[in-house]
Length: 355
Image 1 (tube, helix red, strand yellow):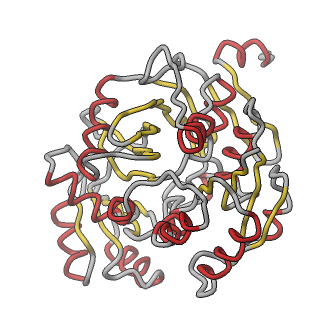
Image 2: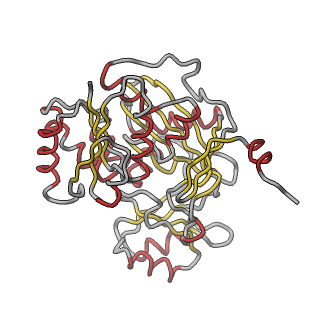
């Protein structure tokens, strides 16, 4: 029986993958590894293994030791930093007889750096908000002068590896923006951009050697605890909804081909709509599923199953539709310490009593 090792076990991004894999008919042994014992112990994985954080100097050696001990057939990572580090170790990983299903490292390097992604998309002629790399105070002054909307706002965020809207901030104050960047020691890393609307969409896809295997679109109806952050962004979806739009399909694929001429693995294109209603790519979540991937599994599209079937057995799905096989309008409702629910708007209305 095949063994699959999932990194980041116990954390929400990885648990969606683990719980999807545990529903597969082949019943592979799903193992977890993680760096936070209090997260790891909560994982649904059959066995759980501790490993240092990916930015720890001992990580490569400890990962090799764990692979020697566990001997998994497939390993998958769900965190940008760990994906980046493990990608550089793929020759060692493959040498242990463990498979990966990842894009080339050069592609990962582009996608985990938002400014590098921006330059690729700009060169490809894709409509995106203008970005300025903030290396010094005069760059920030230029950003407010050239990028601000009618209310004087710009969008600031970290370019380097990190999810959850790392360093994200909408602001119309130069003084506050400067203090924010100083606080994060972000000069040379932070970027400023034209502010898009709050409406966002994600196009999650699996590719194999340049061929699109499956893609499904989801719009986000809100962030969990978004009202507790300055940006309103937490990286944790509160309500997701299945959605389809040919314009989104087209732009997402153009964004992917701009960074990789032969896509291979998982590509999740995050987009935000501009004031003209055009989705603008903001980042590609590379080589990982988004946190709410269990949403699609519950709805009948188990993407982690498709992923592992291709990686382990060379088996490809037989789908009625390659792009957006799920019906529009399905909702995934999430809350802290409550079980998520797959519903429709009509079902919500039927359950709620209004006086």
